[in-house]
Image (cartoon, rainbow, N blue to C red; front, side, top):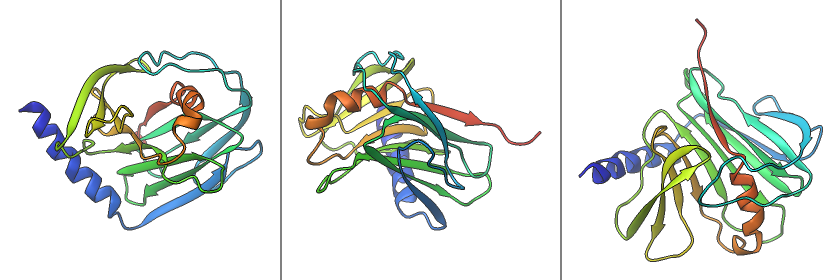
Length: 200
């Protein structure tokens, strides 16, 4: 019953995120020196370290750039992660005050790469359809989470944090996930959802 209710709430949130008007987007290649008015790109190549992604694991990837996407208006959640220099990201967020939704999509810079992996932050709970869904409990960077699989697939479709119900990682990589599995694991090991409080 509890799982069904969460799924229904999450489905509503996904529909509102997909139909969001007034969204701004910034696309960046993860290169040193890249900056935009929206997301903050921290110009720091970093050494990769295991940050506790227990079920998915992480591999060392050289030349990773730290990216931090802050909400346009606080209080709201944003996300930070590290991305290899041969990957790109796009950050989108609603213009409402406070910001209700922040979404960042990442993919390798490769011709024909379809789909994406995305990091989603919302004031509402993350929602999914329950038809054909199997879930397992995992630990994601220190957070208890559900990892979801649809229709008997061995490749996960989403990771939803239990203590931050509006924060999730969504996998819709269509033709490149397996080729980049180790790099994806290394990126996911650096993901942190951050709460930015408003002015006091």
